[in-house]
Amino acid sequence: MTQTKAGIRIENLHLSFGETKVLEGIDMVIEPGEFFAFLGPSGSGKSTLLRAIAGFGPTPRGRILIGDRDIVNLPPWKRNVGMVFQSYALWPHMSVRRNVAFGLEERRMPTSKIAPKVEAALETVGLLHLADRMPGQLSGGQQQRVALARTIAIEPQVLLLDEPLSNLDAALRVQMRRELLALQRKLGLTTIFVTHDQEEANTTSDRMAVLDMGVIQQIGTPQQLYDHPVNSFVAGFLGTAN
Ligand code: ADP
Ligand code: MG
View 1 (cartoon, rainbow, N blue to C red):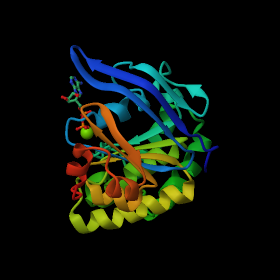
View 2: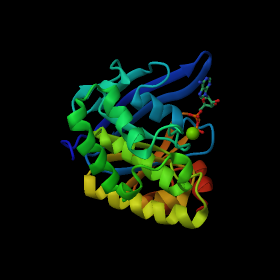
View 3: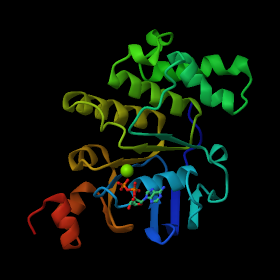
């Protein structure tokens, strides 16, 4: 259930809420199939950037290419982007199965095609046996897996994860982190993973970026950033002795 891998190229992206500048010239390239982590303090613009890629919120200035398509002016459902949020945002009155089917129904997929895709997505996250439960009957970790299944069911080219594990307790967070990475590797999905947890970024990502006040301070492998932080902000944020 994978699509052609596509990379992401962001060129000179600016975004403001009224007078407040939130993204101030983001330039970056994410390779096809890469697991890319975004780290930064609260309020640095991480969610705003992901939302801009997904097509939520104000239209930014600049370009966002997925493969060779500039998606900045496309509506969210035409972008081939899937996003998972910190809060699972499942419909409480719908079964797991219906929750996962919902995005496909919205895209007007024929009913006969929806059921197998829903089952495949639930199978992928190991929850097919709970397909007929209601969200309220699931644990936090299971609910987040449903949210993930709902996103991969639409077969996105790009997966955006906005602090998806923050609501889970510490032990489960470590387990889910492993599962997430295994799933990403299996599907080969180009992934941006936003977190404020450096260990999480460290242990999962091929490369990472540190954002502060809407500006990327540094991009590189976790090792590069820890060994050679380019400025005192990155050093301080990562807690390296420099
Ligand atoms: P992060 O995810 O890194 O914590 P956000 O992207 O949520 O940061 O927020 C970045 C900045 O943009 C903050 O100063 C926040 O107050 C502001 N902001 C985010 N969303 C809105 C909005 N809808 N209207 C006005 N300001 C916003
Ligand atoms: Mg955020």
